[in-house]
Image 1 (tube, rainbow, N blue to C red):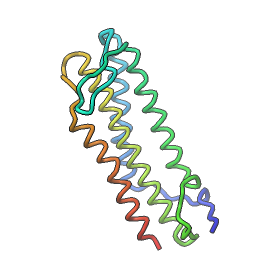
Image 2: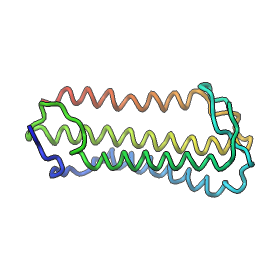
Image 3: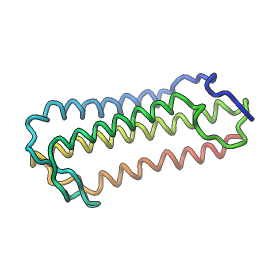
Image 4: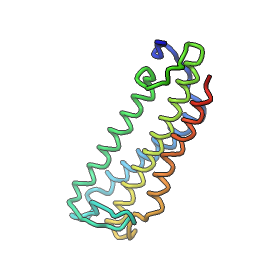
Length: 166
């Protein structure tokens, strides 16, 4: 059934607002930290890390600008899809009666993933700066593992919630 989801307007939940505040604040603070530290960085900074978080390649400090560009693009693209549920993919059992449930579930999933990615990009930006300055030795395997697992948790719960929508 064709349901025009662009006409359905559901206010953001408190959790979505809180996640946005946390995610955007961390990301913006990391970008400000980068701006503040950029000219103090050495000419070569870590440009690639192994799975264990050890530096495997050093590159020009200009390379650190790529990370906020990719992060900003990813966050804005995810935000766009979060605000436009008509572009999401839904099962054939979507009806006018359950469309709001599908919309909210899908939007919450994207919101959580966007904010986890925001935190991940913020962590990477700050940690690369700290490794560059010798304050930190490497990224560490644990934080990136946690971020990757954290990205899959909303997907799993979102699919479970979606399967329960009648």
